[in-house]
Image (cartoon, rainbow, N blue to C red; front, side):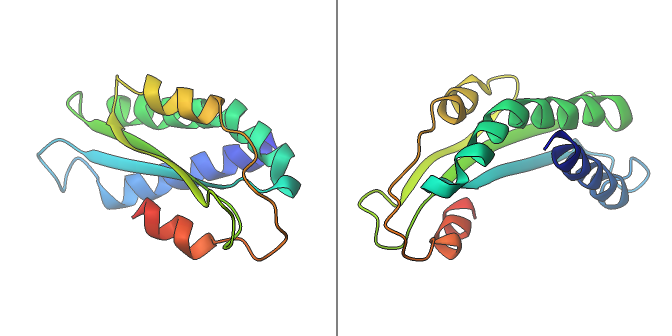
Length: 132
């Protein structure tokens, strides 16, 4: 799983480099990252991996931003957990928090439990809608 999350981080770094080169923008770079996670029963091992790696991903993005772009760069992080469409608690969210105050988001992710698992389709679209 570490390789999977490393690939996500590398891809995010490439996207940031292409989109926000220091030569193009002379104002602070703001990056907003919202982690959206399926929290139904079968995804338990992925939830565990997310808890373990999301902080490292956010730290890596923040470090890369400061090193390559601008000391005034801003990182904002949010989290959306979603489950089945007919679940009693379909979403568990926390809105964007700006670094260095990411502790509320990290605490939310660290305490995330499995949401309902009624075996109806997961509300991926609803989760992405909440993320936006």
